[in-house]
Length: 523
View 1 (cartoon, rainbow, N blue to C red):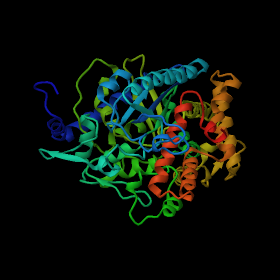
View 2 (cartoon, one colour; view 1 turned 90 degrees about the vertical axis):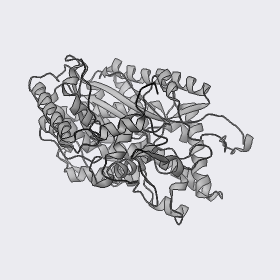
View 3 (spheres, rainbow, N blue to C red; view 1 turned 120 degrees about the vertical axis):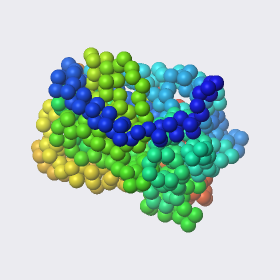
View 4 (cartoon, rainbow, N blue to C red; view 1 turned 180 degrees about the horizontal axis):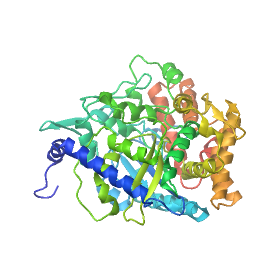
């Protein structure tokens, strides 16, 4: 902290003292500004554009083989893969951004046109930046991991201690292991509650801040529409594909072992546990106090309604916004409010300049994946579906919203084995998973080809997801199987989860930049 700069608690207090009514009034005025620009066509573009947010967590680095140094026979080690805090200077050095926890790091790719070169550029940028980041973090004794949820806490700490530890200064709760961004700490002090609990089978965790949300990491594909007026159509279709795509992507079946209830047996955890606990964490923690901040949103009737929903959303962090010269500074308060408008599918309106103004859909259900190719597969699938389904007037658009919501939460619970409902190209309703995934991925492939991606290349992008559908195997089911095997070999639940996690990280070490999850199973 520089001389004269207020400390974190003081800065948070200043946010909490902001005139909330004035903040709401500015947001409402900003909404009218955005809607006027929408009517003028400012947010329209001549082509679709894609982008990706990609979150990681850091662990202690080390590599042991053949059971040396007390490790397991599969090459993991009891002293490796503990959660690690990432120095802030290191984040700046690797060009990644802060996320909620000190262990988090986030990459955001440069937006690219949805065509063959644009998708190649997305994949190349992720690999190039991640490769450089891995080299830099390795020199610091740590490694970035792409995964849906961490399970091995820092050395000498329990997960509960790490997530709950906080201090109070001048009436403000400050989480010890949270990034120093004011908005994160303000969230914990303005939510109308003193406790934030995780609601998941057999899990017991309550904290005085939103720090439990830092258990989870995700990928978030972005799809920028050519015509802003089409936002509702794309938003509603994204809701219909959310359940099936999540079913293919589940990757968070276990919590850190010390967060399970003392009377929960290993068999209880396996029998009742969900395949995608990231959804449970995000919803239960950030909806604490009766808020409805993280939800599966209702269908949209108009693009204006998309703007109004953000303006009407409950304010969580009424931070004032400094004036600037960007185009979207004309509605900066609405953008600030949008930062806590957490929906599993959400529309976004922004742009640094008028010519760069854009309307896009952010697709938020997918957890971070085992490899870059798996992550890019979801970006390609989402983008292809956003191209193909509207163009072909796919009848899944008529699937009841209630059914789309049920699909989503069925995927949360049961992953690729969930009971899902779909409407095929010929209008027939089906619950046959093979038929569903074939129709889904065929349309994704067609959409990529429509955007100029060669057929062979489109097939290659989607191959990791077709493999999962054909084999009925996801990262979550792989993790559950590994834990069962270790339990059968005599491990207790904690050792089984930790051993599985170290094996995950070890496999990822050799495949993150160039392989796929299928390589883990078919080796």
